Image 1 (cartoon, one colour):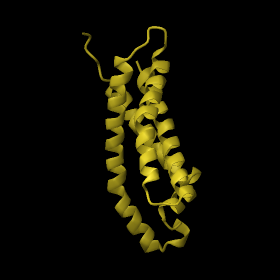
Image 2 (image 1 turned 135 degrees about the horizontal axis):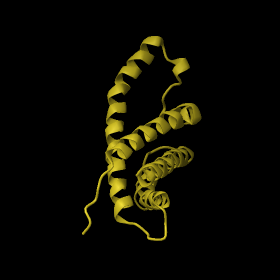
Image 3 (image 1 turned 90 degrees about the vertical axis):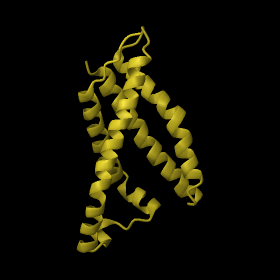
Length: 150
């Protein structure tokens, strides 16, 4: 059996990349929609003190999210390294493995979370689609970085 080599640089860069994507995805692109789904008031409606308190509370969560992103990238690296198709490139292999992990594991979990969230049907679907879309792009980014980094 061939020893698997973990590329920690690819894992770290991948984790940073998906966190940047999350900042953009849940900020300028879909931030208002996401905020309305989870019942968070827009920053413009918060006092300066409340906004600072909110940001202070978020810092540890961003760090924890980064650690979880490292873990996700690490796990994806096992699939990319272990399930190779002789006819495909490493980048394509990375994308395909990331996609199948997403559709096979994340989609059922995210759908269940949305269905049982207690939110309206409209908000449940919006929550599912926003989250599933973010993770699809995240997993593809990780697949490209991990599969393509030599």
